[in-house]
Image (tube, rainbow, N blue to C red):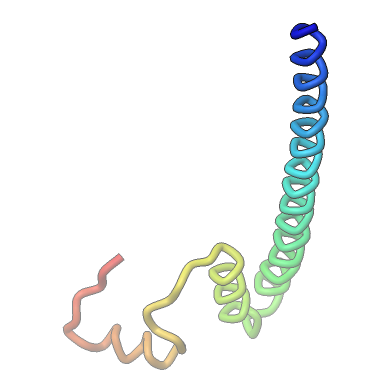
Length: 91
């Protein structure tokens, strides 16, 4: 009698675990689909920057945002001011 009780509990637990695994799998699939889409969009922008210098700054900024990298200098002008200063560049 106890065997059947544990069997049904194990079966119910297995069903719950399978559903949780399926949910996690869907989350991972969605994450990688988004990542692939973002990467494709960034690649197009980089390709444009290679062809036309006007897109270079936009490509760099978009790549950094896509990779979740923050710039210390918000604009090219701020960076150019830093470059002519005596400040130390910290990476």
